Image 1 (cartoon, rainbow, N blue to C red):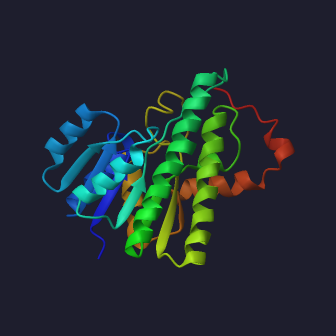
Image 2: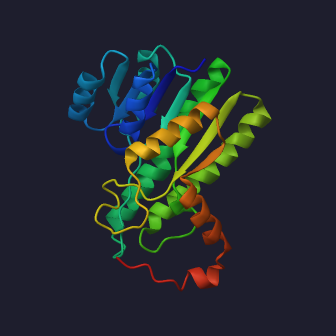
Length: 242
């Protein structure tokens, strides 16, 4: 029975909301984030079943830190990668684009690969990661964000195939939320905004069911279906303004 989960990127937003649900359900939970003050306050709030450790996915030491957190929890049955960075970037600010790439591509790869090797070494386990419906099409409002989210989904697909080829027993869930009320799009006026708590409830269900891919929620499943039908020559002429 799965009852130990490590969540990377859980000091706020979706990751924290998901950690709270798993704690309430009696799981042993390990959380990681960059800010030690937030980790301390969350640990004080959620109690002894919670373990916390500072991890910056962009640091080369992040893999060792992840293994240490897994050890703190007495092992892991699930690793959820919820860390990420992104901003609307109409001016194509280079610092924003590069930081997004470093976090969502390099940092993501570092964490997923580390979790993969851990589970491979113990004969299996489950890796879940929060990508986004933003990976469906290239979004001019957030170029590096949509590109890295597409990369994440493709990477998870590749690792799913690799795991089956090598018979590792490692399984994957690609979680694709729609627009969530977090700092990334706060004040943007995006439609159909969801709360982190609602998204977290769906994430918990998807992880327990070991779903391979899930779009949260049904309204966004319909939206993504129609997005995919739009030819590129039309999509590239659509104006997405603030």
